[in-house]
Image (cartoon, rainbow, N blue to C red; front, side, top):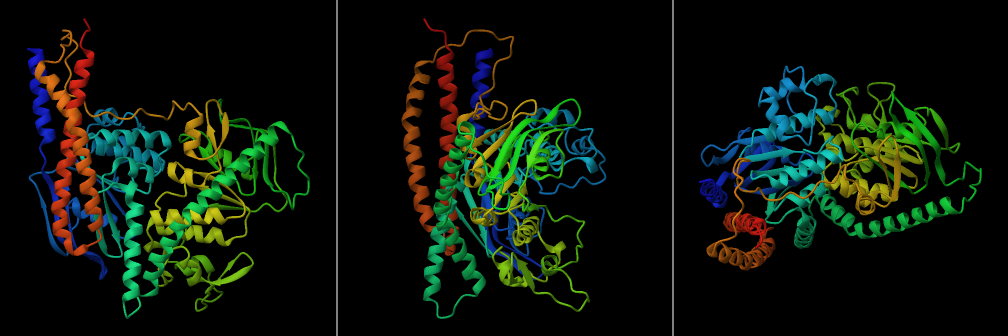
Length: 619
């Protein structure tokens, strides 16, 4: 009876898994905000088991499109439809806690607390924490737990990795890979987008383009579109406005410089490794001419504790010009404490730290509500004159002066934003403005604490380029794995008991050299079919003749289906930039979606038969 129930449950589950259906659709959707078009004539279908990356600049309309899909915003024109009742789990960038006093109270407004804690055990959060005293990471964990516990048909996650440490990011990535819900992901974390997505929707200057490929292929596809646009522009009799030219050609030029920057990064890592080797074995004496020394921070056997456990225990580090040192570890391990020790804003309990006389430290901080919200972007950078009527348009950049419009153009601001108040800026735009401020200050040590939060892809590329040209040293805290691979010359990671170790290279180099059981998570497997209860202990039977034949057939079919998917995706990618064929493309996307789900179903069936065969007793 148990075996028959097992088989019937599996077949019923498999039939549901194979069934493909539309969840939500938009047709000719248009939205304007404040009289300005965000996007228009958007047609988009969301299917079961979709894995969709939603990308674009900050302010391009990613969250607006996500809210349209979720049915939480009205269309100016066009239609939205649902296939029956579709349950949607929506994670906002800034969850609304209303009148809730604790995280637990917030969770229980939506789901049962024990269910949320069980589903999101790998995240963990303290339900007794008061909302007004919780960190950004604690708030994020609670909000994600609510969304996952509801087990919706469609997950829409807007910047889910913001404020999470690497442990939590890896757990969440693994959890999302195994979910059977459709997934729409807005994130600056390129590593999670590359792993999880199979379709990319790009919002760019009011147009919505899509390609049935994951984010792994996005940059190549984007580059092709830019090249087509530049070629078309040259044929026009009238020139396109300067901002558009700069947007396209500037991004393209930065991307073409990417390989050169990465080559330079490899050279710096090799140089850093060689310096470390000489320091460890040669014990070279460094000249005491502090004004000319290449060593900007020299820490020896420093320790710091708050309470019984040390956060930093007998740690030594030399930071030289050109170093980009990334601090890595779970939230609360002491990364901020270590940075404050190295920069001199916190005294060590023991050990010594030396700085050259001319060490100048610039620190990246988010623009918070403590600033005058009505202050304009220009006033934030240039200051206000002695009289209200005074207007200051020049900004001191090092020892020279630049016009504020020209300077802000380098940081992806348009000229019409110069007089915009701070309160009108998005989180990413505020981060960019803060970068513009600290980059104008003379410094030889730059401190970046979670600089990638709220940044879009283009701003991340800009930040990477700025760091590649910066003449001083950089101390940074980031959980963005790809950002670390593209910028860091070494990683200083927290282990147990306040111990910190330095590894030359980026995140991938660190992974290859250390056994990090605390943060590595085994790759998710497809959901297994229902298992027998503990009471049913009858031995597993070997495959029947029909099942053996089916297993062989699946092993033959899978490679064929994968080739079909690759060829069809390649053909559609060539036509993805043609906005006039949107209806035709939607039909092609549906065909590919069905093909992908057939592959998923075959893989699940193969796993069931394979495990049944391997678990059967040998004779």
